[in-house]
Image (tube, rainbow, N blue to C red; front, side, top):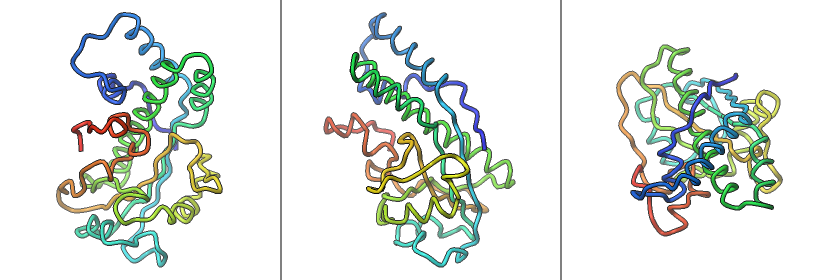
Length: 218
């Protein structure tokens, strides 16, 4: 399914760039605006999801205490995969040759973009299911849900055919700016159960974490 992506949160991009508090120079502001425009023009946001009853998957997709704690009040759950496509990755690689600052900006724009696609997909899920209450998104690699479930996850969604999402032999998703997640469907509002860097979809690329800091959002 195509997912709308019409804008990016500039403040979030600046956070991931590590920019806090100080005034942004005009040249940086101009380049950031250019990177946002390029990201929106290159992004091909798509998502696919399926709904299952608890116990509807007899394999290891729901292995681990953490994901089952997430689904405590859910009799059904959603498997979701989302991507912005691979065109931005190509632009990032080209920029890395001539302008690393622009490459970093584009990379952060891509991270914010795929998160926005996930958020918009969740709203689509709520609307289509008439289910206003969903849990946090919980992805393979979070907590004790192993990354080894990823191949089965994508196969279950037929993600390669439906949205062009694949795994490399080493288990890396391509396009890289992609997310997979499990969400519980509940009858009551759900608290945020998992907080901290270990549960963040930007764990691997976060500039805050690499600098020994946190964004404060988790």
